Image 1 (spheres, helix red, strand yellow):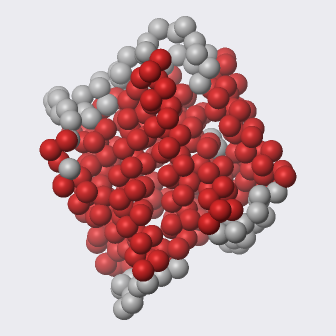
Image 2 (cartoon, rainbow, N blue to C red):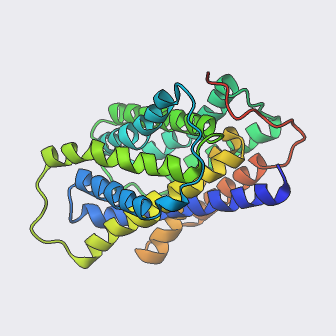
Length: 302
């Protein structure tokens, strides 16, 4: 890949991680006023509306026989199953323990990309992943626990299932990105997510009679900025970089979450949290160290 294209992909991924990090703050504000499934449905519906308005800039669609199962699998992995397992996990385990499981995602994707996409993994990339994972785990442990782990074993298992869904999503995304634009893939997620979460939201709880501007604004931010922006930027980044390298940026999410929590909620970062955040950044930078490996195929799932 040319340096300019690679640099653009890296910038897109960093911005996507920042947006996802900010989403935890927005979710906290939205969940305080709305049932969780209604929040998820609302963000998917708003994202769908944005994509419909911008449909003329949808980009390439090169459907190939059998793609329907990959497209359906992509949406099933994320947002559908991923959000369900994530919600179940946080109901049973602490945020710190869930964070430790989340740190496994880059390594899971690296292994999956090696098996299914024939992507080669250098020792430098693997070392960067390991360093970032250590930093992410350290970051989780350094934070003060504010959630009660009702059933940590079950909760951690749900979180691991969520990471498997995220792994499947990334591998399918890499496979499909050669024939579909990031716009199309992101829009499809929003459309299917809206249809999937509407009946679940209707069955879960009624909508409240009143909602403040802050709660409504949080849902709008999640739907327009995070669902459209973060997923769009991430999908573009994955289409331009090997899947195993692109997911190395996932470990930046807890770092950005802490930064936004400090700026917007007044939470202070401890010395150990700042040091752990620096380790995460160092690991991501190491995993992106330039190599001379030949370019990997777009995907060989067929």
